[in-house]
Image (cartoon, rainbow, N blue to C red; front, side):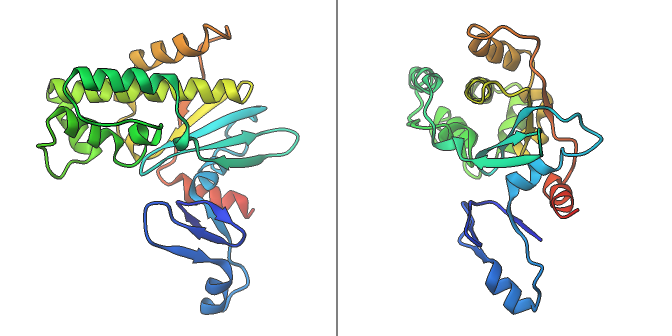
Length: 238
């Protein structure tokens, strides 16, 4: 059972952020097994919320904010199905505003798609650009550490990050007509959930979504497992 960060094409997964490829036939031959299962890691994470512990919503989204920005549509009825997709290549109106704010703050960082803000090194690169590209060895953990210490540039980078994430969640929820619930996963939100999904996030989300669709407060939650991919793989094979 292997869950890897990359699209499953046929019987192979080529990882998005590493020079690695997993082939079902090669693994089966090398390890003398006929029970090899390859699954996209986000699809596996989406399966983790299936079961009696979580209500079966008609439709929900799983959004990953970690080494990449990924999505999965979960169809709960009549049977549980998960369809992975790559929203990171989407461009939204929010990105134009974010680019203008970065430019106004003196940051030289071009934003073309959601991946430039929400995927991989997006947050670090925005913060580095705001600092004049003078901060080496940045990680998202470092940016949040500086933010909690009161650094104004880190605060701006995280504000812009949250704004784009909220807008993306609203856009994707509307696109899928609408998703009843959004599950979040990935290291950036997992370890910084209270800083990311806060009052500002919900204000941005509701402003974008509910000017077009009135509803109750959005149901957004963190997938409550340390390793949702492993939990999901187990449920796939049950």
